[in-house]
Image 1 (spheres, protein in one colour):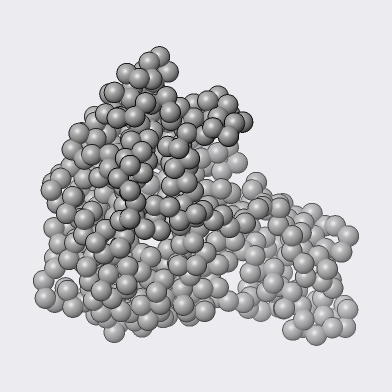
Image 2 (image 1 turned 30 degrees about the horizontal axis):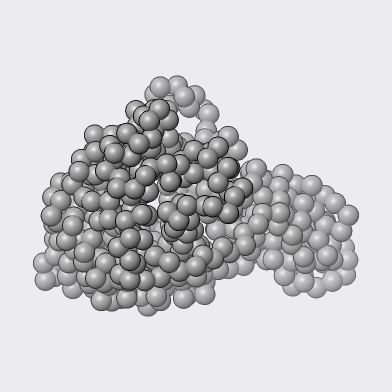
Length: 486
Ligand code: SF4
């Protein structure tokens, strides 16, 4: 069977400039990139700054403390200037260096999704790969920003910040997992359970989810254990970088010393951005991404969790209406296809991203959920989830139908399916067109299709299953789950 995909998912590579050896970047190089980044942060988040930049770029540069001529980086924020500069060979060095840095970060993200996050366990690996395929069809380019991490951990129950847009609708902070001897032991054993299951990919997880890292006074201790056991210091995203700036600074230093450079601050208001810029120098934040979530920023929050609830209330998402990915934006912030472990509740969820809906309001499918008491019971639980909720092949009793977002079209020698973002051609396999028609009818089980086609064409049932499984691996079969409770 030949499957042709219209979406170009070619890997991008970038020369290793800053991420390859961050500590070895020259002061001049770092300053150029850091100052350009700072200017762009103001430009992205602050409407008044955008107006100032358009009217008097030098004044705008001075306002964000630039030591270089801000005209040199105009191509980074002004479309006409970018077109003009790209036509010439005279691209300013700072623009080149900033663009290379961004390319490096994007290439790093692709490497995470395609290599580093791939679980060692073959069943988990196949399940995750199939959901990534599904997500290309359901999210388009939004999927490019998702690494599909195999596991993440919550060290608190809930979050103290209470962002109005919280895509996971995090509850109020009600419990913190303290680093005492018993908890430290459980934590280290928990990490070992996931190391055994997912191998080095477990190190791509983070120690927060619907929770705020800085809410946990022992966060850094947990991160050091994570690094010791899983080999990577975990990435941090915090909305509280200013709560204790000295602590934040120490955490960034610790992260860098242990080889991890890209962390994030969530910026909730223009005023907060100003305070962050005042507290930390441009160079200090060169490797810290500022995610500008304030209302003046020229980015839209994902339609998920509390942002979705607000849209329902203000009527921008009507009753019965659901997020439509074809209209742009994102219907999820879930960048996981795997396990969320809450250490305070001793709870595990198996999830994968989906566009938010009344059934899945926080933008993920909940495949399974269960509780554990200790590392041994956790090990049993996650392995049961793998066994029961991660099918690697279709079973005879499985109902076969395409995902609801897919359009089926019969063609000579096979069939086409299209979603708003992807087009796949399935052809060059005997009887695949008829098999596609039976799946599209949405009334047959896999066994009924296999027996029906095998009888009609006098071939082996196993041959039909082979074709069904090839189709299945592309993530086009409807797998919206009923949550299994363990
Ligand atoms: S977005 Fe993050 S910081 Fe804000 S409420 Fe949700 S979990 Fe907390």
